[in-house]
Amino acid sequence: MENHRLVLPEHLNQFGYLFGGYLLMWVDEVAWMAASLEFTGCQFVTVGMEAIAFHKSVKQGAILRFETTLARTGRTSVTYEVSVLQDETEIFSNSVSLVRIDETGAKQFLPKR
Ligand SMILES: CC(C)(COP(=O)(O)OP(=O)(O)OC[C@H]1O[C@@H](n2cnc3c(N)ncnc32)[C@H](O)[C@@H]1OP(=O)(O)O)[C@@H](O)C(=O)NCCC(=O)NCCS
Image (cartoon, rainbow, N blue to C red):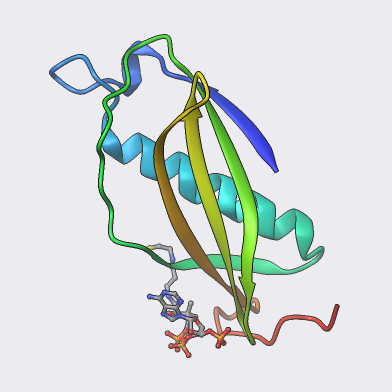
């Protein structure tokens, strides 16, 4: 799945660069959307991400591209790799794991596919 995001003034930190918390939120969001679209009718919550490292700063006006691919399907959980690119350069990547839950918040087996 591919998504885009425009970096606006409200996404910047006090130094004028993208605040990392927004980037993590967007990465979490695209992974959740990918899981929800791929596993129709299932509800997901995020259970974990990899260790976080920000190696490239991002300026206002950047158009970021999020490439989200299914990396692993477990019993109750799925893991998506999210790569974030600006002008064809990867500025961030991470794996996001999500667990299928029922209406009470208890984990559920994924449907057979
Ligand atoms: C999601 C939740 C229901 C899972 O219940 P749990 O008893 O902790 O689950 P388990 O430890 O048995 O793990 C369930 C699955 O998640 C995987 N998992 C657990 N911790 C993980 C982590 N840190 N990273 C990746 N996968 C993880 C397990 O490997 C397992 O996968 P599988 O069933 O596909 O083999 C529970 O942890 C929860 O409610 N967490 C809060 C979720 C939430 O609110 N997220 C929003 C952020 S605040």
